[in-house]
Length: 400
Image (cartoon, rainbow, N blue to C red; front, side):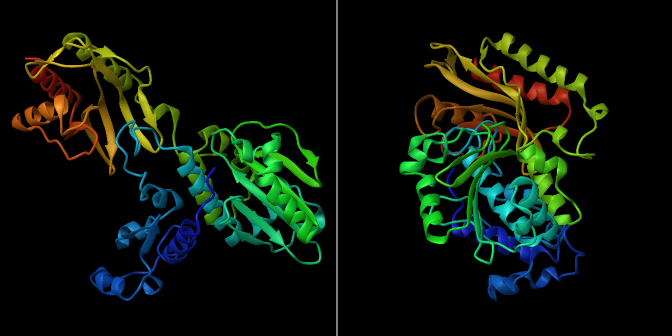
């Protein structure tokens, strides 16, 4: 993956440090919201309730600050408010963004929790006993070859690089099984470090899936561990560790990896309602003659939606004119913590069919927020019958 930039590392470190007095990690102290604007002008270093997210600055209210967490910081980033099924280039949230954030959160947790750091050195990195109480320097390397780097130049010198993966495959320059890793990738850098500093050097891939067994090459131990081990066995005496594990559950791991997770109870699932939603969407597709294109009915954990992709055949008359093949998405989507009913058309709003669709929808008084690449209509979800009538009215108007 792309190594976390220095700015992102500082983002996590400064954000959480500044928020620690107002979050679930410490007892909150009252702040005066009236003075927020004035304090913001005084500089970020002196402004407690302020979170840096990516390269953006977000001012947090006192209520939001008290609910701050790794996950809330992730949601405030540029990928935190994506539309259903759509990333910045039409893709879902890329693995790189999740990996970048998880790596920074892991480094911060290692830095600030002694029990977790000792456990990580012992159980995950499997260092010999005399390393267990060491205080390594923990960095996110800016030279693009180490997601999380732990290094100790003391009596018992060691260096270990942790490659963070959240489901994506290893690139050749990240894979110790590949010659490119040793010739021009991370392995070459590790060999240089081994030559310069001596001591023990290791390379650990931390991932969801099982990896090949450990191997020793060029004096460097290359091995893999699973996030499931971290979620199930890490000591949780520090609340920051609990928060980090919650982040893993929200954006990386299934609930089954956590012990006594309070996040969801099976008997609270509205299964009958989910089936009803699916039935209503298919009924609309049949009635208005378009094809359900995707079997994926739900979104991701951090881009929650329930709906489906659809497509109109070439030549279908929309707003009175035959159109080329047109695809879209319709259903329900949570955006900015609000549940909305939405219809998306994947076409440019500034030309051709998209321009006609947008004019028609606005003329019909549908709410159509501005979007650079798509045309979409949205309403706050109410009850199912009203939502379905609203969806039907959009398609009925287009096909007149």
